[in-house]
Image (tube, rainbow, N blue to C red):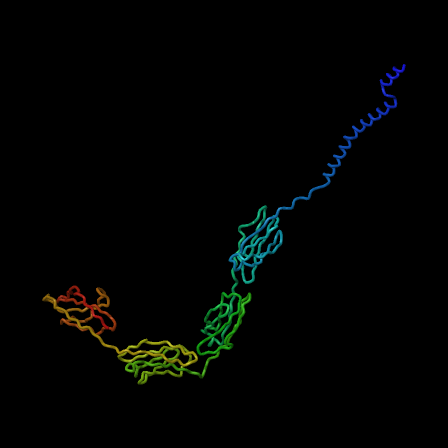
Length: 392
């Protein structure tokens, strides 16, 4: 009996044990069902979390606009303004280059400016469309110029007056018939304006004029004729053999004639300011120079000297061998200052002898001569051989 019971005991677990095992099995089955659900729930939470956390959008793409202002003198430091789809301002570098960056697509207007300069074109429109703008955006700078003008009155003193500009630039102009004058093409700067005219003084004698972005007008002067004061022009003609008793003629601002003294000295007095020409003459003499220009401007003028040279009379004596033709009636004599050509007949009547004297020669000249024979019918031979004569 004891074995059987033992055997029965070993054949199966007690009822209580079976109940525990049964419960464990049920727990494992429940765990098997819940575990996938838990995993799915966790995954669903992860997925749900990802769907609610959106990433920020990428920044929009931007572009640039660049160009050049030339020459560098006007472009360097120029202000460039951008308007249109966006507004901005930049300064061109020392080479006149400029750039606007960080720009979106759109249409823009680029406008340069620089004190003292104008620009061509004055502005440019440009459209950014998915790319940088690096070409076709160029400007040319031109320095602005201005004028200085005024009037010199009364017209009697202003008309024809010389007006001199100095300072930032130098120039000279002549006032018109009404005394008006103008200097153009001037840059900004400080200038001095000075009028002058022989026989007149001016009030003020000079004036300063500052050009600063605009033309300057009304730089006026008053001209006053100089009266009472006169001056002289004098000189000497040497040697005295040619100067003594020579006649000296003055022309130009005034006309006069005087005679040099025994030492060849001469003087013209009582002259106003102006430009004159002095010319000496004396029979039998030439003068070096033949005349002189002299300007009187508030002072006497001396040393207007001349050198007299005695004129020497020259002549050329020609002779030739008679023609062998028995019917020759006479000869013609021809002269030229060019060898071999350009001969001109000297005699008005046929020369019946075999000599001829040319007394009409000039000093420092070379002459060339030929002769021809003429028969009773008026037929003239060809030229003879050529001879020359050098007149000292």
